[in-house]
Length: 284
Image (cartoon, rainbow, N blue to C red):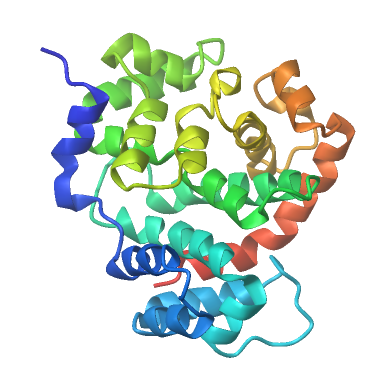
């Protein structure tokens, strides 16, 4: 009997779990009495996480004029809820270190994810009510289901990737996944996000990032991640032509309220921030 997405996630068990610091921060933020110093102390107990958070706080992601030299100050400057999103994005990368695969390098995988996150941040910045950190994290995590499938179903995954490379006219990979294994990486990623008890916004962005019209509670955020995923391909190959990515659904463009003429400046901004963010997130 074929595996389901839920069974795939159950089978990876402790191989893919969020670090203790991330779990503690989530718990602290459920307490209205929590202070920036409380969060700073938790982050400071993880030296590698501390370095990453300070690197991000001082990066072009924010472009702050004054140097942020300690974690508590970073929490105060960025905000407690926003720092949680950045900790999650950083922690998720480390969570997959123990889930090997021989189909893609983790660095190449996260390069696409970082571009998607940065472009989602740029699109989100057009809407004052949205958190750029949350959308950055949603973009960062959108493809996490792929890594699980690559690990648990390597032969089927290799066939799917080969089909996509050999015939560009083939349907998108998520559609091939459904045909060959009965579910796709969006469903697997959504199931993992549910198991991790991530906010519903992130769960929806991960689960529907290829089909934004299926979004239920967060259509704007899902559409942003969907568009960012398409534009990330252009950033990776240094293209300024929408012909170099899959056709973007007109309904998604209408939902995000950003003109295609504005896509290139957003991509360029993401490229200007990429090296700094890659260094911060992929450092040990």
